[in-house]
Length: 380
Ligand code: UDP
Image (cartoon, rainbow, N blue to C red; front, side):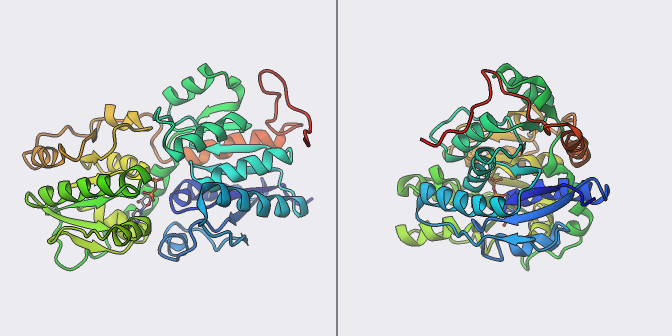
């Protein structure tokens, strides 16, 4: 008998370290299912996708849909839904796994559920409370329709249950990003640093959130803040393609003295962080990775969907005006060491595989009716 197919949907760079954790756990359980890596195409540039596969021990995607970003959220979501619906009508998986909060995550969850295919959301339950963020809309919408909710910690799982999700669909599995980080760290630490950087002597900058880079005034304020911070310590900034585009559209430039790099491969970026003194970022994943590296993380956002990293001590929310002071605090040694976060232990992949195995064994795999009843087929 052929094993049931489980499709792991990857759309953009941050999906890959999350899915890799599950992929490797499934590779250790041959016969349980046939994992199929589906790439929607949202990030297609090798520097943002293809180059990361080998670093994470992932194969080339089994299916590449080639739905490139562009045309705005609605167009990307719609085109991705259409491509996935076509795929899953011809080749129906038993379960679809979606990760994180990008547009491709939402498109995949919607497509699968409309075809009555169970959906597991890897990294469920994150909330920053800001519904102006496209990612917040995506994560809430995906959680609302997923049949399995894999939360990174117990508090997040408890909140999902409090939101009304049936407890049997919610699992605190731990943080998949940490699985991938721990796996890659020895090789990442051994990577050479870019010429001109000395271990412990620089900070890393990454910025790409629409609220920070799509608005000229916001981006200008951040550039000024980075310039002030650069007076305190050397800074290196691997530029996200979105940010590079906006800088050029707005006629702005990264301050002199800040080392600008292209987006780095997963191991190179991890190595860069592992040897850094601090990171200033608006990335979600980087806040978590900084915790694992016990690296002071200055998050340039008004809120975070990962408050557990604030409680753990490594992460602090800072405004552009507060960046220089926060950098000075780090350099003065005035920053707490990382406190433990339960379940961020490198075993999230195994816990997800355990739940997936239960879903595959169950008669209607994990698809118990949601509170208020399952909807029927609606064509109107
Ligand atoms: N990352 C990378 N190269 C870089 C910058 C980031 O490999 O130049 C990795 C980072 O280590 C993390 C992931 O990309 O694993 C985070 O992705 P991103 O910041 O794009 O998205 P977010 O986490 O904010 O959704």
